[in-house]
Length: 628
Image 1: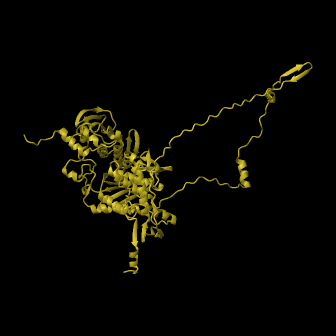
Image 2: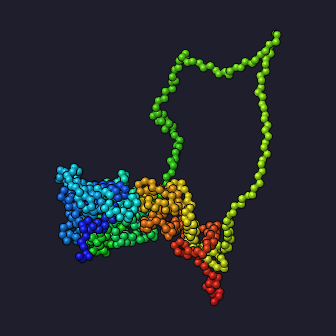
């Protein structure tokens, strides 16, 4: 017997399912694509326990007949394509016929479906790739798919899943992308009985952006549109104020399908090149409409990549769509100040007083009459009298004087104190080494950025920002190693709104983020509230710093280690350090230089730039030809 054998259908189905169903979010993605292809205008997604225990996707699309439902879980059974030529002009989101068969192979699958011209619908239940039952059932037009106990047939897959809220975050991200790509569809997302996303389906992209990202991002968006050589780009791009520390808010869709594309990302970032700070990325929602024959999306199992026949034209169209949106109108961030209401008093004129009395209600001045005959008089209060005792002798009567109480004073002997002799306990204290203040002479400040110092027969130039940044970093790092970062309580807690992925990352790493000195907790729908920040941090940079920290955790997807903590700490140190072009007084310069000169063998900021550059006396004299 040969060594090669054909695998059973059960095994081959599970292998194929692994390419399609990686986690609960993969299931939701496939089911949502089917719902869109079924011409649905309303889609509801509900999950429990991160989608591992329960997922439901309901749509009001065209539905399936009983026979179609039976064929739907057979691999490569599809209504989207029929010939080889169809692969070169795919116009639907799904086309491979693998979704339901893959899901049925690794879960308990239930389907309720009904076409619009049928009186009754169909109920089907499948597990392990096989249909267990299929019967007639009463149900509304459209399709409802329930997925229970994901990976129940392949329990080894469970160990690769994240916590429930992390998996729920992945699903919310998938739902959000669909809502942004199809604003004409009303999309609802429910997590553990709580509504998280709801879009009206009014075909307004701004409404979908508001539902997904909130008011601030929506208000920062500007319409973008450009067309060239058959490539049409339309959507919205945000102004620089909405930039993020990662690319999570760069959304690209090709013919309504979400894709990840380095080409499109580079085009947008190039358009923003002179508008954003380093390591900041724009927010955008752009849909590229192109002939299906000019794009190939069948190059990856998850259909998240696309290959364009004319990359140059696509790049050019996306670039100018973003560029034109960015410069469509001048944008100046508006700063508003809320002041307490002030009451202004204006002296009334005689005419105003007359008009006021005319319009005032009539006041009755007659007092009510009282019948005093029915009123019981109140007797005045008299203190009670005490009769004094008397005694008579014949004709004379004498008053007995009142006996005054006797006051007895009891004198007790005060015990003598007992003096115990004992040996005093002397606590041993570690005496820290007292270092002498370094000797130097401040000569001045150049360009409000560099401090000129004379020290040890040398002239030094000190970068004030790099120096202060290093000092703050060293202090934060020392506190972090002892897990005792000194914090300051915010007078007004900061509420930070996050995306689905950012919120899931925060929930997963909440403890580690708090150890960095940002005491925060979940507050609302994809919101966190920050109550304390490190003493070395700036209150004005809370939101941006939180975004950066979460972005670093999201990129690493692992528990914090010393290297990752160090990167986060010097981000915090950098944001609050003295900036270049800031004039310092003599006291500020003296304190800064004293602290930096007392560091041992450290002459770089956390980013690696030098803090101090020295010029020897000989070098300077050679420049002036004093010595040869």
